[in-house]
Every structure is written in structure tokens, then in C-alpha cells.
Amino acid sequence: RLSYRAALELGSPPAAAAAVAAVATRALGTDLSYVPIPGDSQMKTVTLIPGDGIGPEVVKCVERVVETLKAPIKFEKFEVSGANPDGTPRESLPDEVIESLRRNKVCIKGTLWAPLYKENTNTQSLNVMLRKKLDLYVNLVHAYNIPGVKTRHEGGRIDIRIVRENTEGEYSGLEHEVVPGVVESLKIITERNSRRIAEYAFEYATMNNRRKVTAVHKANIMKLGDGQFLSVCRETAKRYPNIEFEEMIVDATCMKLVSNPEHFDVMVTPNLYGNIVCNVAAGLAGGAGVVPGVNVGEDIAIFEQGARHVGRDLIGLDLANPTAMLLSTAMMFRHLQIPMFADRLEAAIITLLAKPQNHTPDIGGKASTSSFMTALLEKL
Image 1 (cartoon, rainbow, N blue to C red):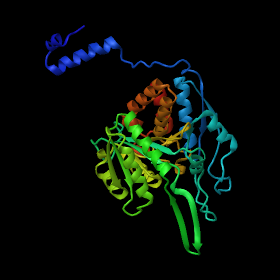
Image 2 (image 1 turned 180 degrees about the horizontal axis):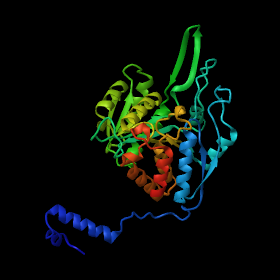
Image 3 (image 1 turned 120 degrees about the vertical axis):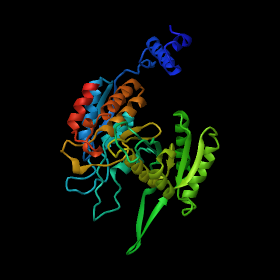
Image 4 (image 1 turned 45 degrees about the vertical axis):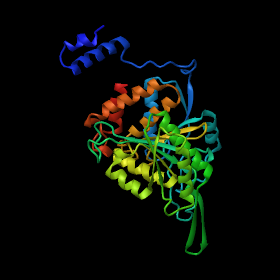
């Protein structure tokens, strides 16, 4: 064993520290060691919904990764579209899909297309229906810099976790025409749902060693609705004195996101503001193709891209970026208590994206989905 004093003879203190670190690495091994609970390696069934647009292409990438890693996962696959063959929106999910989700409690999902049908604009998308039916009240999105992927803030550090309320607000679907030409759209904010999303945000910050939670609101205008959300966030913050709390109006939030994204850590938002903030953050981090996400309820989790874009213009072109869906898969691996597979997948993706030849067109490169996956599977 090499002592620090002996290592000093090698040169400067940094060189000595590096030498000691090298010895420690050899002594302890280079890999983290996970201590599984008996049964963690048993096969797990995951519901798989390819969705619309580029969904089937990027979900196929997930299947190939799981097969290559030999991860203990088998998929229960359902072909579901957000639209009927004639282009009208589907108004319900098949019962067998809901039963599968409730049975397996974990899902990988592509985005379902939500056509705006000119004869019926009131129909909610299947994405929203699914989140409401299963009470997936948390949408968690992680936007961060990936080395090698150019962003609008070169040299800056973007590492933002967005916790979005997922079931009410402007997405309540309560609209009606009062008289011809006058439409009333109801925004529902409840104390119960505001409290549980605030509690999730602070619990997430505590469990993930985050320093600050920012509550995004428009209580200066919507004093009752957003005021209730903000009030609950303030109450919740008092129970977490180790976490810094700030509140910010949504328009100021968007300005600060694009001018100084390093300011933000964990953000907690009502539904619509969360959708806007997630997409702004995704754009800052490199686009919809690189940002992972998950919808979480009491006992069900559905993993999907953080920015929910269907990408219908890319269907069949072999140009879709599977990074966001694969990073969401890594999140799923950790959720399923098989974190070593997540580490391997994330490390391989980061290594690949450090080289411009592996960049798909959405992040400024010329790589195809196929060439990206060939390189990734070789790395795995």
C-alpha cells in the first residue's frame, strides 16, 4: 500500500493524490458492488406500448438493448394508436391494456398521437386519459447536459429535475360553450393534488441530494387556483429545512430558464406550466430526443420521453434519436432494482454521444438510428 507521504515523493500534491487514488482503485475494484435482495434477478414483466410516430422505432431500440444486456425483463406488448384508422381520435383505451398496466405496474411507452378532430375538439388524448385513469399524478423529467451534445449554453451546466402535476389544471377537460362564440374552460386546482405533488418534489430533492426546489406559479393573476398551489408548496417547504425553497412566476421562470438555466435544480409545477417548462428545458439540453421522463402514481410507473413529441414527420426515415427513450429505460432499470444495467446503458450512451459521428440529425449530426444502435450494442 502506498502512503500519502510516500506518494508525495512522486511530485506535486495533485500527483500524489492521483497516485493514492490509483492504488485505492486497484484495492477496491473499479466497479460498484450492488447488494441485491434475493429474487431481484427474477424475470420481471413490463408492459410495452410502442405508440405512434417514431414510437415503434425507438421502442424497438429498447427491446434490442434489453436483449443484448440480458436484463431480466420480458415485455407484454400492445399495439395501440391515439387515432382510429379514419384519423378520428380514439376515445378509450382497450381494457386489456389497462389490466396489463395494473398487473405489471411498470411500462415503457411511446407517445400516442392526439389528432385535433375538427368535429370534436373536446376529446382528450389517450395520453391524458391514461394518466388520469391510473392516477399517474407525477410527471418527472430530467434535463441535463450530455458531453458532446451542443446546446445553447456551451460550457454551462444544465441539470434540472421537473416535477409536474399530471392530472388536473388546464388538462381537466372541462369545457363548454356558454353561448355561441363564448367558450368557458375550467382550470381545476385541488388542495389534495397540490399537496401530494409538492410532497413528492421535496421528497425527491431529499432522496437525490438536491439543494433547492422552485415552485412555478401565476398566483399574482390566478389568486385562488395558483394561490392554493403556492400556499401548499410553502407549507410543505417548512417540513424540509435542509432544502432551499423559492417561488417564481411562470413567465419570469421561462425567461430565467433561457438566460440562466444553471439557476434551477428541482422545479415543481402545476400541469400546463410543467408542460411548457419541460419543453423549454428539453430544448436547452439538446432537444426532445435526449431528455428522459416518467409518469408515476402510487404503485405504477410509465417511462417515456421527457418531451412528448410524436415525430410523425420522421416515420420510416431511420433518423429518430433513441437516446431519450433509452435513458428512460435506464430510469426504469433503477426503478426495478437492477441498477447495474442502468449504469452500463448510461455509460455506453454517454461514450457514444461524446463522438459527433454518433449524433443523429436532431442534435446536428448525420448518424441514422440504425448506425447509432449498431455502435451502442457493440459497446454494450
